[in-house]
Image 1: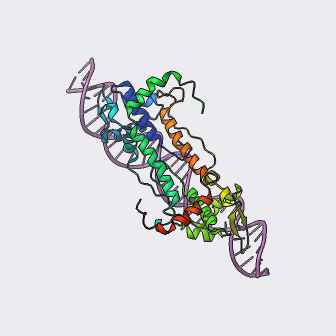
Image 2: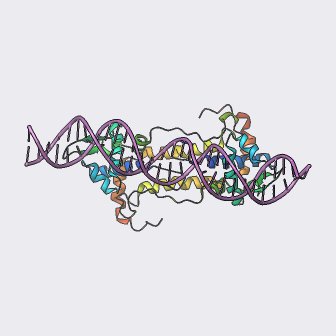
Length: 149
Length: 149
DNA sequence: AGAATTATGGTACCTAAATACCTATTTGTC
DNA sequence: GACAAATAGGTATTTAGGTACCATAATTCT
């Protein structure tokens, strides 16, 4: 999960992919099953899903036949809600200097980074799990073609 | 330097602010002077500037009256060059699954984050230190006013 | 009733990255 | 020669994220 400026933790990646899988399958799945499909540590995935449950995005049940499933229709869950459930709400603070002392306006670096952050939030808030599942259906055939990065 | 998706290290913040200060003053300054103005650790600032020197963005001289100064006109140094000098060139990899196996097209999460990264790079590449110094002159009077992020 | 399966919750450990610290060495000025 | 500054390298320290482990609770199956 390294690279670029935009950093997401493995936990967030597990959450996004896991929730996406639940939306795709549309049925209850066990953490073991999910983590295997994602090649992720089962214990880590378990922790991640605990937070999703607490956030009310996922319902869980125990015992054999137990597992997790979406608590709401896929069209009602945005990617940003998933992100926030894992990372918590966060506010930025990029200026080294005290805000009032920064010689670069009301810190130009800070506002630049805030803008990019806002763009991320806006995009994540506009996408739901249903959009994902839809895009999968439309794009799944041409995956191999544009897979060169 | 925590918060938001867009994460920059303190090293990058030191580099951006330090270079900005050099552009503003337009003269040679010592690391001690710069680090004090930024309320940053002098040793850390020294390391950061070593990298900027190696990248050819800064000229340095030793001894009393020594210090660092821009190696090029401020209008020829982009913020992205500064960022890259500290963090190195980086490529992203956000998909948990093997790219070919990701059930979400050519991973939709990955492409989303790549787009945001590209946006950052584009913006940082379009801004030079001269633009910064200019914005300071225009905005410096109204800093206190819009300082409620 | 008891065994198996699954989620829950807590704690402690591991690792990697960023930062801080410390001690020299080199280069230049006076 | 004395001093000031960058340079260099090595070694903590800190922190966040991830991992591992363990006991427990809930549910299902036999």
